[in-house]
Image (tube, rainbow, N blue to C red):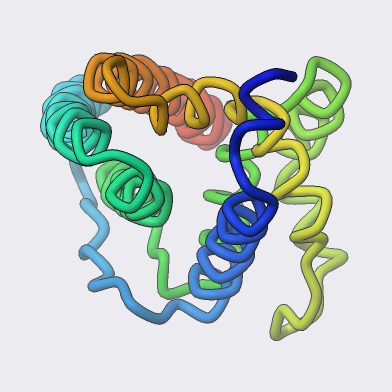
Length: 206
C-alpha cells in the first residue's frame, strides 16, 4: 500500500493502457510475425524445442528487466509493455511448436487464456482452466470473427497479480534486482503453464 501511494496515479493508468493495447493487438494479430506451426513432429521433439524457446525468452526478459529496473521510473515504465511483448511473442512461438497456427484468431484467444491462467487469482484460474479443458466445445460457440473480449477483467486480474512486484521495480536502488528476478521467475512460470496447456491439447488428439 505504501508503494502504491508513492507511485503517481498516471503511472497506474499507463500500466492499464499498456495491457489494453497488448490485448487488442494480439486479438487483431498485429505487430507480430506469426511463426509457422510444426507438423509431423513427435511430442519429445516439440517439448525440447519448447524448453529451448522458454529459456531464450526468459533470458531476454531477465536482461530487459535488469536494464529498465536500473533506469528509474521512466525506464521502469518502458519495461511494462516491453515485457508484455516478450511474453506474448513467446506464447506465439510455443503455439507453433505444438502445431497450432496463430493466424487463426481462436489460437490467439487460447494464448490469452494461457496468460489468464498464469496471472490470475485462484478463482480466476479455476474458471479459465475449465474453459481450456473443454476448448473444442468452447470454440464452437465463438463467432467467425472475434469482436469482443473481456480485456477489462483480463487486465485487472493481471495487474492484481503482479502490481506490487513491478511497482517495486520503480524504486531506486533495488529496481534492477527486482526487475531481473520478477521477469525471470514469471516468464519461466508462463512458459511452464503454456507447456501444460498445449500438452493437454496434443494428448487429446492422440
